[in-house]
Amino acid sequence: MERSQERDGAFLVIYTFVLLVRPAAIAAVSLSFAEYAVAPFYPGCSSMPQAVLKAVAAICILLLTLVNCWSSRLATMLMNVCTVAKVFSLLVIVGGGAVVLGQGRGYTEAFLFAFHNTTQQAGRIGMAFYQGLWSFDGWNNVNYVLEELKNPKQNLVWALMIAIPLVTSLYLLVNISYLLVLSPNELLSSDAMAVSWGNQVLGDWAWLVPLAVTLSTLGSTNGTFFGGSRVCYVAAREGHMPQLLSMVHVHRLTPTPALMFTAAVALVLVIPGNFSTIVNFLSFLGWITYGTTISCLLYLRMKKNLPRPYKVPTVIPVIMLLASLYLVLAPIIDHPQIEFLYIFLFLLSGIPVYFLLVHFQCQPKWLQMATMYLQLLLEVAPAIKNVD
Picture 1 (cartoon, rainbow, N blue to C red):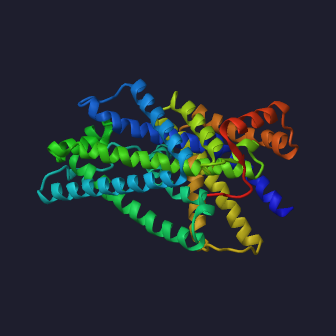
Picture 2 (picture 1 turned 180 degrees about the horizontal axis):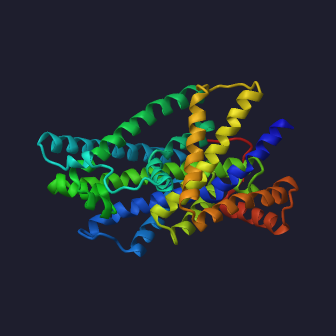
Picture 3 (picture 1 turned 30 degrees about the horizontal axis):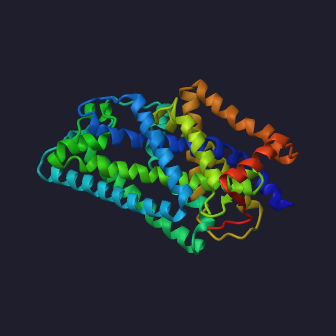
């Protein structure tokens, strides 16, 4: 009974992640991919045609859907290649910034007047954190594929302990390099900052930067897609999503229905959205979820003696909880927007959906018929546990 209650309590998180958070993240990163992929074809343009960007982003999503449906191993290989390209591009930018600094060039005054003419409003600072923290949000993707890891009790900890400090150090050094090379006006006006940096530092080799960053964003999209589809797949396996989404391809052994569903929602979100807007409102919803989850963990630590394969000092979740409260409340209080209300209403809409479809299991007959026909069409079958 207790195990069932824990699953039921997780429904709102599953509901928001499957229907909005993960697909929106895929849409946002695919739009970023499109900006860097298209940038070389529009040199000198401060803004690129939105129709072209959205078309390229849609192609990116469809391509990754095909790769992930074809083979989980192929998707993992693509992620590894793109990760190497990402680290290489970051090291090039860091090295280029060091050379500029060593030559005595660059906008060193940018560090002396870094906060000149900037706002001190709490809400605006919170929105700025949304954009900054988005770069580090990939840390939680590995949790979604935990059951597919070998020796997760050890490898998960090592992955987080190595990756998070590495990413933090590289991103800080990259931003320092941007500040050294690009003027404040160039930083604000550029849609593809790495491309602008490359044009000024690398000369004839500037084409390497958009290529490397394109591969980097492709890998980020693939990682978000890979993890997001697993959330959908496991949620359906636990009875929180339609049964079809819990099935795997009988030959490829990939969660094809979950992958296709995640891709379809992401494609819908690409059409009206842009990167900054998606990130802001997605971060707002994400930090509501993070804060709620961490508060529940603190409650369980104080009230229940449960097995704890991963242990951290209590001060860390307390700091995270305070940060979550600030990032959620500050933008609402200081700069309220009607979109925040829409997001909150979407979150609450999961309550009637849970009672209707999960608790009382009111499933229409047409859904059962559709499941049967789609199962035959897609050549998928139920899976009791992960088959990869």
